[in-house]
Length: 240
Image 1 (cartoon, one colour):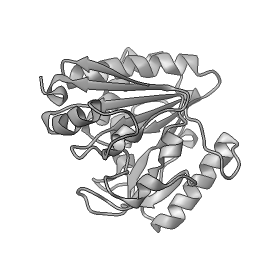
Image 2 (tube, helix red, strand yellow; image 1 turned 60 degrees about the vertical axis):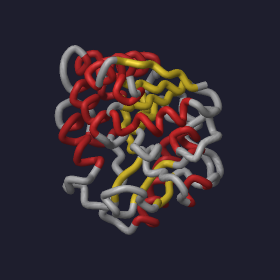
Image 3 (tube, one colour; image 1 turned 180 degrees about the vertical axis):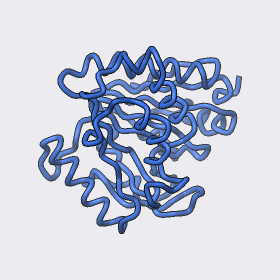
Image 4 (cartoon, helix red, strand yellow; image 1 turned 90 degrees about the vertical axis):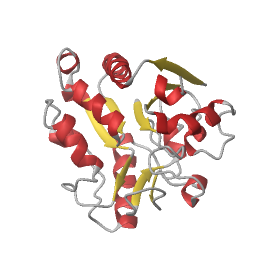
């Protein structure tokens, strides 16, 4: 069931999300598995988490960071989600390098998707045909209603067997993408959407007027089987 939390602006969203991240890390037990998102609002969250009091409130040795999607570019490229996360968070908190699992966007997309899926299966101890269960998946939403690299009208929306696939871009930059699939997103214990800005308001209004899973907007297809689906949205995104 989707829970929408309306906040004043991006600063309020990142503060709320940082508090939720810390709280969930404490509840997770021996390890806290997180899939990171790309985008400007998630970046603001990562910058918040790298400052006090949040930085010291997390046992980073127990945090294992994955990526919800990636652009097929080198890891130092300005369009790389990994490069953004590295600058905003990974270089600033004591997370062990071996706890970070990046999608290798510089390699052929299909091979990278297969390799990343194998890494997930091994880490989470799942068999082929099963899906990993993250403690937390962070997601953003584009003005067209896409999330991760799951774009409107693309074949990736119909994937039901794979955990990770190469996907076609729907917006700039028009480079191939890698993405977790809906079976993985919907298997998470917790999902937190971070949605800020007036450019999201038309899609968001349409999504909130529809039932979960009944929309042409991919973000609406995030409908957890057994978990918490939190949407943190600001006044601009709500059109108020």
